[in-house]
Image (cartoon, rainbow, N blue to C red):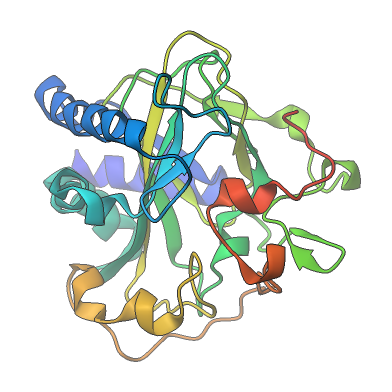
Length: 297
């Protein structure tokens, strides 16, 4: 059975750029995640502006906490780090990336009910190009996700051929594609929906975004960036320099061995430079704020 499932994962990732694994976590495991996240949201009542942990909605307040993201979640609470060693997660990673795997960053995106922020169309690769393309993301659904509460939207097949769409405006990296350019047919968008505890995996070149959450239900997804250990970043990640990102490299090992020799492949690269707002990088939400024309307005 495993061989058939693994072949299906590889085929879907190659052809469509993504696939879904239903109910990877059970109810008790998801309840633990929710308890931690609820406590983090409660703690955000005492935060007045975005900081090293929280990315806040503009209308966040102590009375009505509204958090867009918990940054570097694996450093905030052990539950997020421990998930990377879940046997079913390791099985997926080894199947797709091989025996040596590293993680790069973990973030919890929370779409508050009644207007949680959208994310404009983008490719993850535009934010962190590597020496080869064995790079993907794995997202865990903390809540049931349907078409109404701001699901991730993907453009199937947009990851091939390998290309980097323009995420710049006037020569400055803004972390989003200009919908007026018509580079991709956004009418082909497919929502990724599922029950809490499900995961979805997608290629770093896949074009994706997310609409505003206009429902009365929160939508929380935890995103994990994984790559083959011999895929090394070509630029600093999330405002860090390479030393901060990779060192000590052993601490980012998920499977197998840490690799000190990068594998070089012919991949398209457009560096996410120069930074917006006088060098401040921030989260994707902050970077995209400088977009003059939005798809999810």
